[in-house]
Length: 318
Image 1 (cartoon, one colour):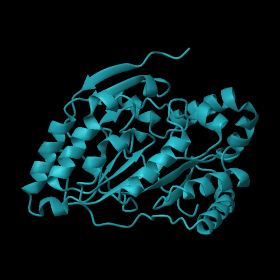
Image 2 (cartoon, rainbow, N blue to C red):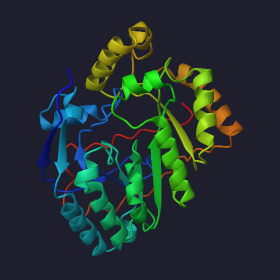
Image 3 (cartoon, one colour):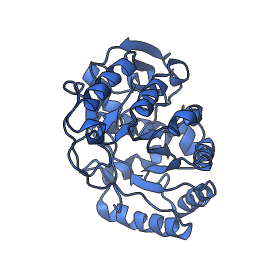
Image 4 (cartoon, rainbow, N blue to C red):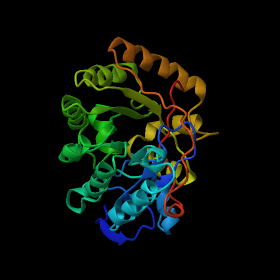
């Protein structure tokens, strides 16, 4: 039985958290919520709830923390950066939604993400946003005011059975593709995170063909594939539990693939990625590779929030 969703307000000391990995194409992460109502079985951020003393299972999707002072905390940091030696140009780029979906259903009323975007527009700070929700269209007016913005809609399959079983509370994949089309039509750089690619579930040749061919009709500016990463023990246990319920015939095969690592073996991924790249080229869809960037000057106005990880992962060519 599904538990009712519990919402809890929390105070954030800071909103911008430094990203030190040079492979990441952004300098800071920003997450207005902790936990996510979408409840994707494969979500790599699920274990972040354990930092709050919560279980890393269904509490991640049923106990949502709202950073009620998100706007105030963010403005303090932006104001501090503006007064620093390098100014806002030294701040770099901000990624919104690295450990939660900033447009999960509660955002419709809470508007924490919108409040943060208003400040980024005010201070003229570039940003990227990752979501599975068409709710982002509500904020198109602010997206157009940012000096640069990149929007990433996550879509990994058009298979209705896989979608409903593993992403039980997300908007339909077609709705997400339509959202990409509307954003691109408005002049916003928007594309698709084809993530995660799921072994034996979404990486069959016919499934890849259907997704990439259909996606191309919505004119995404890029399409970035990335294979499933079972990053922690908590994430792995939860995913295998859901696999046992929904696709029990695949449990043994997944156990073999993910026996030694959070990733499937490179030879398995490379074979499939070759086919994905062939299809992307066929439909003239490019990938936007992360680039190395200089280290940011330092986090403005104090230390980062405790245990605030950056969860996005890119596995181009793997």
